[in-house]
Amino acid sequence: MHGNYEEAAPPSNCRSRQAVDSGKGWWRPPESSEAHELAGPARVRQLTARPGRHHLAGNNPFTPDGEALIVASDRDGPTQLFELLLADGRIRQLTEGAPVQPFSAAVHHGGDKIFFARGGSLWMIRRSTLEESCVVSLGHTRLGPCALAGDWLAAPARQGRQHGFVVGRTDGTRWDFVPLPRPVANLEFHPLEAEWLVVCFAGAPRMHRIRRDGAGLECLYRCGPEEWIAHETFLGVTGDLIFSSRPHALCRMDWETREVRELARFSAWHPASNPPGTLIVTDTHEPDEGIFVVDPLTGARQRICLSQAGNQGEEWGRNHPAPDARVGWEERELEAEWTHPHPAFSPDGRLIAFASDRSATPQVYVAALDELPPPWYGPPVV
Image 1 (cartoon, helix red, strand yellow):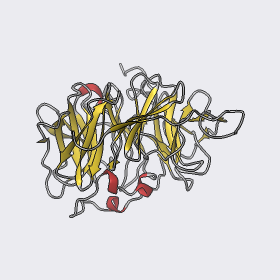
Image 2 (cartoon, one colour; image 1 turned 45 degrees about the vertical axis):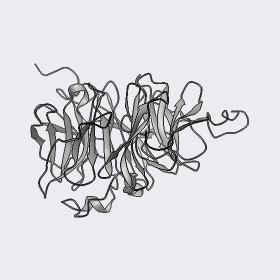
Image 3 (cartoon, rainbow, N blue to C red; image 1 turned 30 degrees about the vertical axis):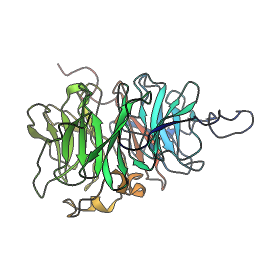
């Protein structure tokens, strides 16, 4: 095992709700309102309104039952995790203390546990009790967003000058640091074979796969010098990958054959899949045309709403990757990441959550797909 890993005691219990009107465990009243300016075929609701930076806490921010959305916010100081009940809009603060690493949270399949990065440690909080506990302390390690598969947890990491990722069990056992040759921009467990992860490096060639134990590092796609691959993720439980080929294509890769095909030619940016892999959602940039759903079989697409997000970041103003490919998770401009929509499906596929800084500070929104015309939603066309 590389590095010094040790358990850490959980923080003190949450404060009395009678003693304060804010803080850990306190329920805030709803802040939701209709966002008519963003509506298209889908109705859009703004869920947060208080000044501060709000965003989806991770790539899959909904709880498995679809009843709550996990949000990160610095509305009361350092960034913390909150849960937002979709039925009535109430908001509860989950964590307190040292700031949570932005965009790092992963919701366990059971729905009660949420894992996240904080400083040089990976933490877990139970929604039922609000008890926070340290899964593993990694010393002087810089950590990126969590990836979760069952009871396996991983995150991009850097120890000193050595890049790689950490991986282990959610009960705090079997943790190790896997060294890699370049900064890691993103990683994700295979949805069907949790012994595999897709690892995306900063710069080309970007997409690789590796076994959980660090063996078998293999390049999946050697893109050309003018091709800019970004925002890789799995297409639900199909096992295939989808990604953006900047600036004007959404692509799909067969995990087994490595065949890459262009699904649709438009400015797709942050694609994400519904759980079964039957529909893709993506925001757009350069140009920003709004948020779309895409059929992963035919590539047909339907705009569902606007985002009017700032979409900031020096690297995204180019039509080709920078010659010095140094942008991993830790070098990302967080000020820019706050302004990106990062859309995500609810577990039942009926809602799409996203962020937008159209009102100066990033807020969280949700678009309802129920009213989309067939075949996008509802009964198929006969």
